Amino acid sequence: MSSSLVLVVIVALVVLLVVVVLVAAVSGHNRLVRLRTQVQASWAQVDVQLKRRHSLIPNLVETVRGYAAHERETLDSVTAARAAAAAPGGAPDRLAAEAALTQALGRLIAVTEAYPQLRASENFTDLQRELAGTEDKIAYARQFYNSAVQSLNTAVQTVPTSIIAGIGGFRAEPYLDAVGEERADVSVRF
View 1 (cartoon, rainbow, N blue to C red):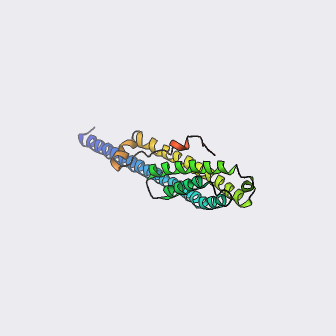
View 2: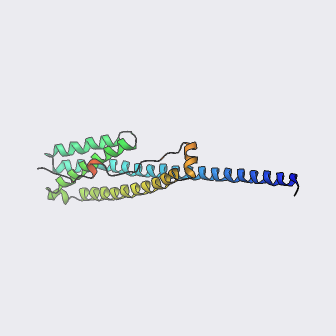
View 3: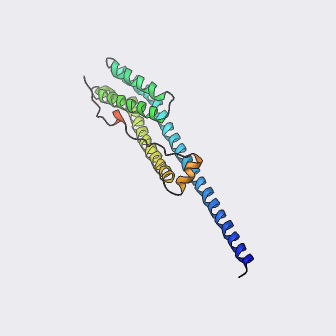
């Protein structure tokens, strides 16, 4: 074999290797972008369901207020928790506020057990059913978000995409966990 032929083969192999590395890098980057976009889209779905929940709460509070006017403290705590949860903020702040709102709603629903005429109200029953459906949708949206985060975090932390993630500024995202008051039992005192 002539030395020029060996040189051509070596150059061809180097070029091929460079092309393979570039294709792998671009493919890895595009995968990370898709995963990050999925996390963002799934957070948007959580946000949509939380906003739906926030829009139902004033109607529920007003319905209960008509029957249980002396439960002012409970009603005020739900209203205040809703306002805090609806305030702008990042995911950790929103999650803490949503946990407080969940706890306040639990107390509100527990208070309604003392009012048979309220439980018999069609308006209250409809609102309670809507809120329960929304809570189910929130749980599903959270589960979907956590699944998307798991995919992204796995890609960000495994080789070779971890190298591309470091260069491209991709980072692991936090999971939506039940925090603080969401884990506690609802306690109602009359």
